[in-house]
Amino acid sequence: MGGTGFTDIDQARQLVRSAMESVRELTDGGYWKINADDLLELAREYETLSRMVLAANVHLAGEIDTQGIAGQRSCSSTAALLAQTVLISPAEATHRVRAARHTLPRDTPTGPELPPLLPVLADALDTGRVGSEHVRTIVATMGKLPAPLPPEQRDFCEHLLVEKAAVVDPRSLDKIATAVLDAADPDGTLDETTPASKMELRFGSRNARTGLTGLTGTLDDHGVDVITRAIDALAAPRPIPGPTPGSDCTPDPRPSATRRAHALIEALERYLTAGDGPANGGEKPHVVVYVHWDQMHGEITQATRESGYAMTPAQARRYLCDAKIIPVVLGGQGEILDVGRAMRTFTRGMRRAITARDRGCVWDGCDRPATWCDIHHVNWWERDLGDTSTANGVLLCGYHHREIHRSEWQIRFDDHGHPETIPPKWTDPEQRPRRNRLHHIREMLDP
Figure 1 (cartoon, one colour):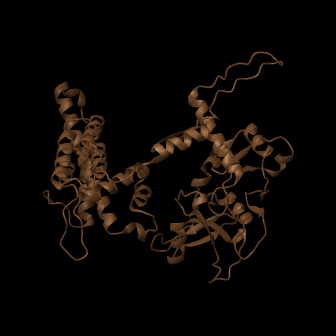
Figure 2 (figure 1 turned 60 degrees about the vertical axis):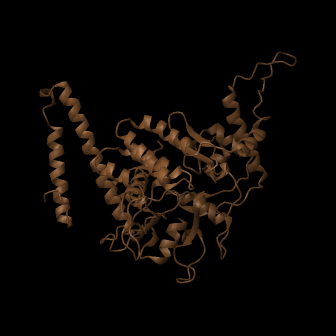
Figure 3 (figure 1 turned 90 degrees about the vertical axis):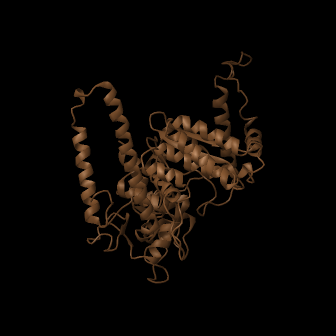
C-alpha cells in the first residue's frame, strides 16, 4: 500500500491491524536493553506516533461530520455520535470535530474545494509536530482573534502559535496564546463584542466524597454588581448568640468565601420562594424532592433530589417544613400510580408524575434533563387517538421529540411501565429495546 493511503474499507482495516500489531510489539519490547539517551529519543518518536494517530482520528471525524451521519443515526451532533460510538468524553469528541472543521479542506456545494481555515496547523497536525492540547489551544485562540484583524496579522499569529507549539509544552503555549491575544488588540479597539456577550458560567463534576460541585465563570461589571448587591447583606458575619440572655456572642466561624456561597444560595432560595421567575418546562422555578409516602408520616430515612442525588434526612425535613406537598404515589416497581387529573393537554400534575418516572429524555444515551424536555404522546394524539395520561406520556428533549415524529424509531413501555425506544431495522436488525438509564444510575448505585 506504499504510503498512498487506502481506497476501500478492507485496505483501511488492514492498515489498522498492521498498526496495532506494530504497537503491540512495541509494548512487549526489551526496553531494558536500551540506554538512557536512546530511551528518551524513543519517547519522542512514540509521541509523534501518538499525534499522527490523533490526526487520523481528526480526518475520520471530519468525514463523519461532512457526510452528516449523526443525523442519520438520530444523534444531535457529530460529537455526540462519536462519544457514544467510541466511548470517549463529549469534550474529546467535540475537540476532534472542531479540529477537523479547522484543519481539513472544506467542501462547497457548487465550487471547488476550499483550503483549511488553519492550513499551517493542519500540516503540523498531520506530521505529528503538535499534540491534542496544542491543537485545542491554537484553535481556541485563533477563534478569539478580533474579526477586523488584517489577514496577514491573523496568518502571522497562526504561524507563531504553531511554531511555538512544536517546542513548548501545552501549559507554556497557553501563556503564549494569551500574549498573542493581548498583542493582537492591545487597546481593545478591534474587539467589537461586549463583555456581556462573553460571560460564562460552568458547573463542574460533583465530588461524591464531599458532596460539592465546582462552579467557575466570568462576569462583566454589571453582573458583578448585581451579585454583590444581592449577597452583600446576606454574607455579613452572623455572630452566634451565647447560651444565656446577655452572654457574649461567639463570632461567626465561617470564612468569608463560605459566607458568600451561603448568601448566594439564600438569595436564590428567596427568589424561588417568591415564584416570580419565568416558567421552565411548564413550571415556575422550584426544588423537587422525592420522598416515599409512608415516610411522610414517620421517620424520613431516604429522600432524593430531582437530579438523582441523595438528600440527608435533615435536609429533607427542612424542605418539608416549608414546602408545598404534591404527592406522587409509586408502586412496587416504581410505577407512577396516581398524580393530577387527566385532561386533553398534559397538566402540571401529569408532568410531575412523568418527570418522577423518567427524570429526563428517555432516548437511550441522551443526558438532557427534565426541564429541557417536552412531553410526547407515545400513542400519538392526532394519528393514533392516544389519550393524554401519565401512561401515554414520556419526556423527550426537543431534538429527539422532532426525531420520533420524522423517523422510524418507536417508543413503548415495558412490563413495569418504563419507557424504552425501539430502533429501526437499519440500526439494529433485531430491533432490541433500549432503555435510557443515565438519569437513574445514581439511584441504581444507592445501597
